[in-house]
Image 1 (cartoon, one colour):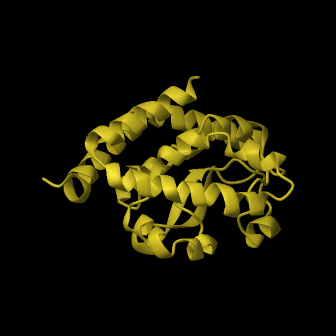
Image 2 (cartoon, one colour):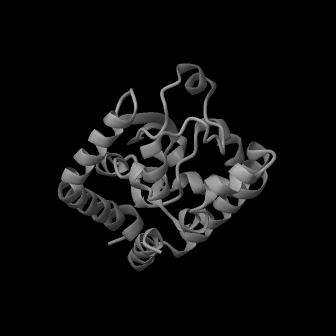
Amino acid sequence: MNYENCGKRLFDFICATVGFAIISPFLVLVAILIKLDSKGPVFFFQQRMGKDGKVFRLIKFRSMYVDPKKEKEGFTPGDISRITRIGRIIRKTKIDELPELINVIKGDMSLVGPRPEVPKYKSFYSGKYREVLKLRPGITDLASIKYRNEEEILEKSDNPEKTYTEVILPDKLELALEYKKKMSFSTDLKIIFSTILRLFT
């Protein structure tokens, strides 16, 4: 059985479904804390690019104050001005990404795969990087581990957008190509365990 075409999806569905069921009480607790901390919905939805460039709705815990004007302007790398108190904690620990298990169950995402970008960066997926869009995006990958402190890097930059598009994003795409070459069940397990280990160190 080909892991990429069959085994990976089966692995994702089983693990995401079981994992979501196990941590659901914890997710309810986080949802309550978000509501107590600031006004607004518990979840945040955003358009992201999926497999073959197909756009889907990513679901995360809301970590920012609601600001319709800012949300209309779109994604800005390194923008931490709107992050709530509980938001700082759940972003630092990646708890805000746990609802993405729903995206995995639906088939929009995988447990391991390149992080899905917003559509405005689609032009970067050209040439050899077109291969990245052939992969189902994931909750974690090699770039997630390497750039776990991405927000801190961008916060210190004089031009966060330029730093992201000229330094971080190209490196993420290279790491995605590296993952594509090495994709296997054992590789996915290593990345998942490395991600968990980083969260506790």
